[in-house]
Image (cartoon, rainbow, N blue to C red):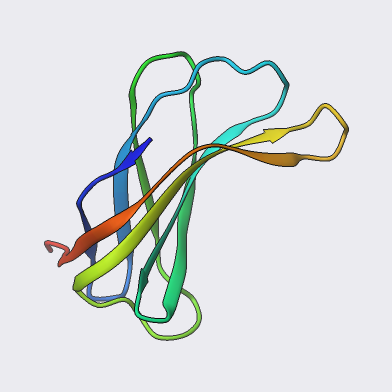
Length: 113
């Protein structure tokens, strides 16, 4: 599980993050997601979610979202956290289980166009 060292932010505040992940088939039923957050200072924003394919092969993920409330992210240094989460449904209620996570500093760059 890794997040790329850079992300983008568009003029309207849409943030795009990406990276790679690898997971094997799981012992329990339920979907696996790549979730991501980005933050600068005290501000933290969830940035989308991607359904993961757990087949033992490395895959690329891209999450994109525009914060609805609060101030927008700006180009510059930020912290990203990407998490691979399994929602185990054996009990009937989805129980989240973290498979892997990556957290580090990135640079948000202005999106082209």
